Image (tube, rainbow, N blue to C red):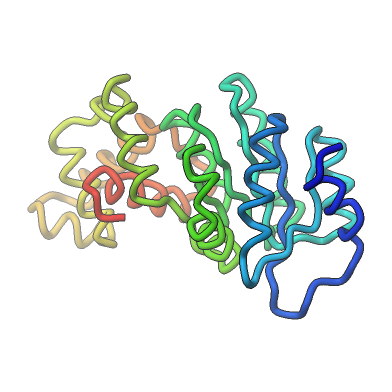
Length: 237
């Protein structure tokens, strides 16, 4: 048991100061968990109430500490799908619980699924572990119900996405539509701007969602996700 874990084990059952953010740090990578916990512990308005590695331990910690946010650090690509699935389950079981994933191994389709599970979701790259301000901002954002995708993470993420041709799958007309979605335009407004029928816009939007692997559930959120992806790609987030 490390120094950070010992300290948290001794203090996790102590009530947080009213108004402070209660955070659980989770994930399979010990050093990454400890780094995140150390950074968050310096936050003026943040209490790290538990550190949990295995899924069972995380479930116990959620029940025991009633957190506002889970910050999940992962350094293994093969477990990202599991973490995204967990975020989806938590969206149903604990709808007010925020989740921030910290990893360098998230693909665009996985990020889209993560953000589509709830507006209370965020993503950061592993290099942000030492940046207490960004970690706290991300935690505060998802706790408020606002998705968080910081600019540095977004830029690096989309560079990798471009190399894998995930974003390149969109046609120029689809990119036009996605750009307008990112500006908050409705299908009717997009149709007027591009001189198209509403049905034609709906077909393009459906194609965009399919190529970004955004499914039929969470209909409202997937427009938010698509907007975030486009704005991040253009360096607007």
